[in-house]
Image (cartoon, rainbow, N blue to C red):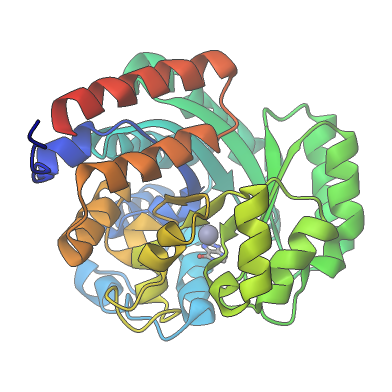
Length: 344
Ligand code: HPA
Ligand SMILES: [Zn+2]
């Protein structure tokens, strides 16, 4: 018997790969063109009012330097239509990347702090998500992410408001400036969300130490870790993450642009796959970091010369680690098996 040589993974095959995107900040999908269009629609003057001057700002030295621009650009989001247009634009691009299921994070506190009603943000995003399956073939879920550089009281107040208005959220997350804002600050928030039946995720180990990953699991009870790349610094933690198969949503282009790693070649993802960790690939803030999830896969395949089996594993992990219904997961896994028959 001869073994067939692995086929090359071309861009059409990567696009066709059925995948779930589990780490995506919807405000991080605002492309410069849309920022300027929304600014014009709302009569807002931005500090960088042209495409050229705005684009010049997209050089980051760390997470905080990115967050400064990310929060400043949110000023253009005023009406439900703005939130809906941003979300629909993302879904259209996600479809081009072969995304079949997405769990979208949004930052409710960042909008409330600007004087935008919570219902405006929630209803606008939800309106676009409501037609996503029919329009784009993408099933969706919404996750309210809380700002870890704000107080737990502020997060609790916004969570209560979301529950009171019966916002269509499936879970909560924790994002923004990580170092100095450990998971231990948010124990009551996560307890409350758990009581309310919500799924629990948190960013940990992006810039923060491996102990934040451990604390997110032990103190907050999260089901998934967003990023988690610094876990590789602690071999005992890696062993635990492998044993428990904790999902890690890794965002390679983000890590390079925010200098969490020096280069894509130096990214720990191959080592993480090799160790048997339950990793998947996501885009984080694709309008800021040089590409949607398809571009992340393409860059990885170009850098590491991966075969079909490796990208299939990453896609399978993303589907299995999602909070999609059991039926939806089976459907996507069947599509993945069909992809493998063609491309494997
Ligand atoms: O990459 C990120 N890290 C932390 N907080 C964030 N908020 C939006 N994007 C990010
Ligand atoms: Zn993120």
